[in-house]
Image (tube, rainbow, N blue to C red):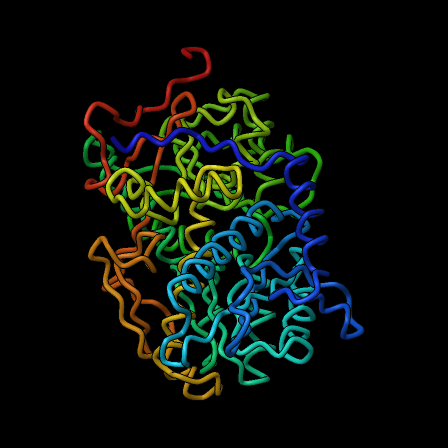
Length: 450
């Protein structure tokens, strides 16, 4: 059964312990890890399995938010990449390069676009990485990939969905994951089904989102698709992130009388906004729909009582049924739990997939020279037959188009829209991810009826 328990992930204590242990490991003599502070720069956390004592080593920059508002999410990406590289190295490394071992150099974007670009440049100029994977936040993906393009270093974007990542004509920048368009259209399509099944001719909707490239993209795409269907926008509310209280925004939602609420926030803001929704007993009959972000982070669930997010819909960027349906994914999930102390998440899966795509490119190129390596990424073609270990994220395919955007073999992202019911993620969309006996609750019960 694909009955996902809510993930209980990194407590602050665990995160602190992991950080201390990683930092301590960076100074070991003869280790495959490096401390880039030796180059006269700020310290860069480096986490990777030791390569073979002899033979060549290929460095890959692993660039994620390890501090700041997306820290727990970034750490999960870094963990997934590390686990994948460990497996690759144990299986003989890059065979086309004589068994060269991969060494990850992990750098921190600090959840800030300007810091991301500085960290990316340091990876290239000081750490001499051959390629870069990262960097989750759209703004960080945009700024850091611009640096990689400047230096002609292949950059594999994972996480950021803003259209600008692959719309700038950069030939060294590729994106594995979906765009904001795919995320939003999954939700809109699911709502189409709900409207059909419940004889709803139209909907009113409210948009509340962080005032960033990512948030604005989500809102714009939702509005375009909703307007095509004749739905009515009753609130369009961009929000500056980092607010301690969002009561004023929530009261606007309440006054709007919206049938549907679409929200786009990262973890800290998601917690604040959800608490305000609950405290003010805001009834949304056809659901609160999150485009992911903070609602995908186990730290979000750790911070809130189940009642606060009960009946919320979340667009998850992976096949949540994979753990139940494939033995090899079960093995990796068990490894994640044993090694890192938490249940596998979409973020871990995406970090794993990014590292494997980098490996496949290196294997195909047989060199770290940037131009053939860039072309090797372009030529990657993977299809999800249920066994390819690169596709832990559940994407139906990895095939890059003329913009270097993964086409997902026609747009099927492998994602799942779920509704949380008393701590359980119940699949809503697509139909093939549904679970017999577990169905979403619609319309959403009012607070007075719960």
